[in-house]
Image (tube, rainbow, N blue to C red; front, side, top):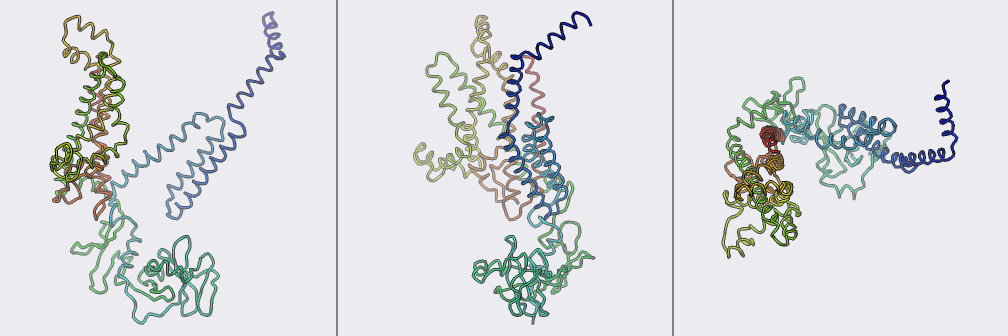
Length: 544
């Protein structure tokens, strides 16, 4: 061993036995332990993970009832991964990323995927269930009481909030069932005389409870067996039941429903509804995959072409004018209040951002009241009792929306432009002034190009926002005034996103598939415009 090695070994030995160093090491270890969490942190982690696991177990139990096996697998895998991450010591970064990733998947990725899935289906009014559910609903709607039907003593029962019937057959057998579950032998029934009054797993309703839920009881229809052609039991009073059979006869092998009274035959033709030879359909139907039919219908259906054309034009005009008006007004105010000779600039700046501090939907509602044609503040006070149709005339309604959106949007542009102007070096303006440049030339040739370097991406984002600015349209005019000639509930001030909302959620027929297709088209349009605009803004970077 060399002298150097001996010295290193002695130094290491001294360090290991030095009391001060040992004390500092223990203190560092204690600090690390406290930073890593003690018993309280462990208990909190166990409680939170217990809540997550409980939610996962509940979700699995619910999904089992709907037979959603793929979703069940996803829930189980995610729960296992979350537990592994938070019980492992090797996954510290993942512990911080996991909550955000889960919420991102739930509220962004899942929504996008599900919207895309719905766009390729006929999901909507009359097509929102399975074929079996459609058959049961159709046959239940055509139920007729069987003449001279036997009388079945019944007891109204309940399980998990769902009503059912406990039926006693003429042979003395106790059967129980619900609207979704055909009659089946009851477990350990209790009889009073010849009538079954209770069964394991079911809560028997007293007479007063039956009276409180009389409407539900009288509408209750319990299938007699798995074969829908066998009919169902119904009760008019909650004590006696009678057999009802449907005027429709279902042939599962042939895929047909036959009206026994008229002889009309309705077939499954692959469109998600039983259809007769003359094209008449029986609704409700069922949900099927239709491929690109919704996208083709969105752009080729003559009934939708007219509304889609002018709504699209107004959407682009609204987005462009909103960005242009808010930007130039915000820029003008920023230049005005950026002048060092103006007094009380701080007070004025605070006043300028007040509209931005009030929620947009609340401001839109206030403006809607102010623009009322009969008693609005603008007509009665500002214009001396005039009757200006701010919200009822197609042209004035568009102008009103632009005015309100200008009120809501200019404070944001004012703040952005103020910050961008203050970041421009004063030396550039001074040098241009010395060279004899006029103020307008200084602004046009120096300030504005440098300003656009910072503001252009925000203008693109503002265009995308206003392209889908649902709040101001819905709260101010609800898309009105209504276009009575349109086959869908659309108005003259509707933009694409509000039209999609009305296609999906208003009117007698709600077409979620078509609305989802429109949503995807809107997404593609905004994405393409944004990509092109961002590429154009690269030319401004040379100025920086």
